[in-house]
Image 1 (tube, rainbow, N blue to C red):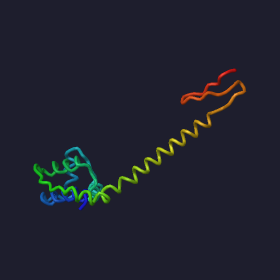
Image 2 (cartoon, rainbow, N blue to C red):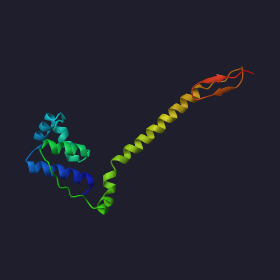
Image 3 (spheres, one colour):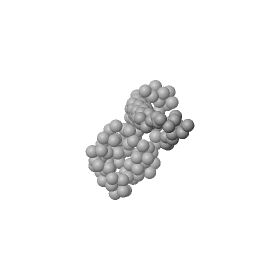
Length: 134
């Protein structure tokens, strides 16, 4: 079981123990000032990808005061590491490509601003171009 499954099972176990379904949990979260649509709440719980603060918020909405949490062993987390981290890697890679693309755009724009003058050589800076006279 990976970490996302562990998080999902913690929430589902408490929902079952309290006999609270997703629609009821959504209504209780709404009362607490944390609106969550039934469909999006259902999807969020199914995925198991949410912040721990969300779990605490849901537990409080259900009236749970104490939770016993069986954490996975370190070696089990290390074994399942590939299945828990693969979702974020493409996003990080995509962001890196986007930064590179923006950097190339800025460089290209900077190159197009360069001009030479008959008055002498052009001196470039990051902010503006100045022509130096002879």
